[in-house]
Image (cartoon, rainbow, N blue to C red):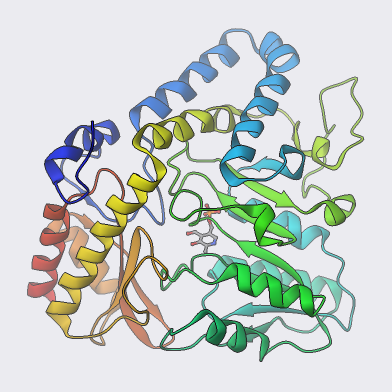
Length: 390
Ligand SMILES: Cc1ncc(COP(=O)(O)O)c(C=O)c1O
């Protein structure tokens, strides 16, 4: 059936697939993506296999299933499966990079001022442990105009000591799609390694990791892919793979196998429930059934609607031009100055709306996430509540 991206009625069945709690208007997929029923069902089946005969599951079924799930992931993000390992989330993946990246006393790591707070902390600790200086922070433009302008702003903060650039594919506080391809290109020219922090990108924007030419890519799959909570991945470019070490060392693969390849260190992280990884394929199936381009068009249309409505209410222009080059399924709009936490809490307590209100670089803004269960009525409810609360 062909779906009209502007007609909420066409999307009713998909909304039901998520089964969001009826008292809640959920507009924060960007922080925590709820898991659709069929993905939960798939994960539960893996858990049944595990729980009913753990020895058979771990010894005979886990590795082939892990490898098959990784093949599927590799097709989705367009790289060779041998460059990927499953990780619990982007945070775990970033920690592995920080644990493994060779940093000397005179080396510097560069981030932007739109990076996720925990990522900043990870690199502060890594730099401190290496005896290197504090991470450097590039200031992104307050008004985004072009890819060249962003590249220029980032590399204006680089110098001959910069070894690594850590940069979001889509920023957390501002929901901006950064021009990562152009950024990687400039970094290569300057022999600076790039680690992309990409948990918002898979599904929300087309992702072809091999084409980017980055060194590392860390992502969660429990955000826009809507895979089970606790699923993500780390990509490592072949020249960097021999340096990779898990943060928590175990056997590598189940005995008597001995890890020979870099990724084998990550297959058996000790005894744990790997069902979230194994069920990622069912989330890719779901997106494929909808059609990725249709998914993006529908959720971008909703995000654009949210942007229009909030801008109409506040009269404040967002930092990016309108359009899919700058934001995808998630849009961030400035709000008049005030208490960000208090507003977020009031939206939940008085209206049962879950949406992050963020204070970043002295600007209060609201970040609205739209997925297949979102409709215009959700956004209208938010705008009406904002109209009263602001
Ligand atoms: C840009 C960015 N990086 C990293 C993370 C951490 O993701 P996770 O909690 O899935 O590890 C987030 C979470 O929202 C994020 O927005």
